[in-house]
Length: 86
Image (tube, rainbow, N blue to C red; front, top):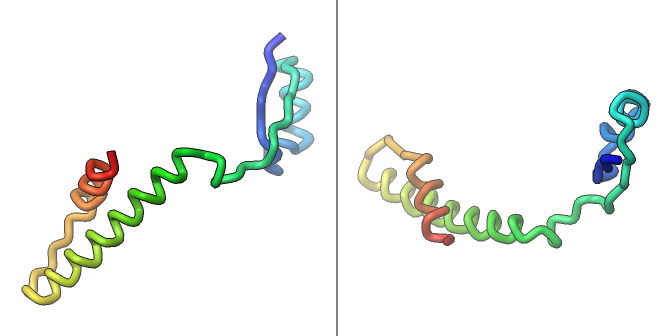
């Protein structure tokens, strides 16, 4: 038997979803605890990346303001933030 391990999100518990899983797929549903970001290591990493990004964004925005430029490469800032967070 196949089991489906899922969280308690309301959309996962609708009559339609549970009927489909139970009657069509015939999978056993196993309810997990609700999502808790503090228990998910990727959230800690993303938090670190976001801090790096914000610092870079503020620094580059200030530099652009002072220089009169108007081009800010957001993709580059995101990429740099990820690279520095490795």
